Length: 163
Image 1 (cartoon, one colour):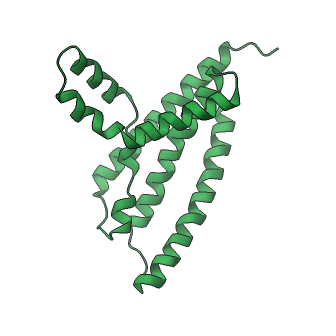
Image 2 (image 1 turned 45 degrees about the horizontal axis):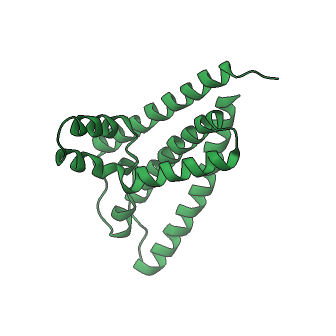
Image 3 (image 1 turned 90 degrees about the vertical axis):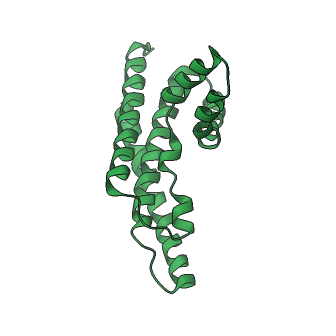
């Protein structure tokens, strides 16, 4: 059941994301008089993987919190925090004394690094593609993290009473 919910949400988000990127490509093509490069395809797939992580996190949170409003609020705050602050925790940890440094490093390396999937700047400024190796590693990282969150949601769902 959890896997079906996840796949349904992920595919629906992927369809909406595809429409957005098609529109973006058309607008960019009319402004630049050329079609955007392969970086747009990389950004689309990376963004879709990012959505997979967020959807899996939301499914897990929906099993932890009883109210949908609490789930939505917590997931919004966590996702925005990961997008805005996640990449900076390692730098902040270097400035701290022990044991704070080790604790913040542990948090930094255990949270999903959503910044790996954010290629918006590269698309907007017309940069070249990300190297296929680095891009593939980041996609694999996202898929593994998504899988772990979905497995955690499945395990938690099995423990819930169905009455």
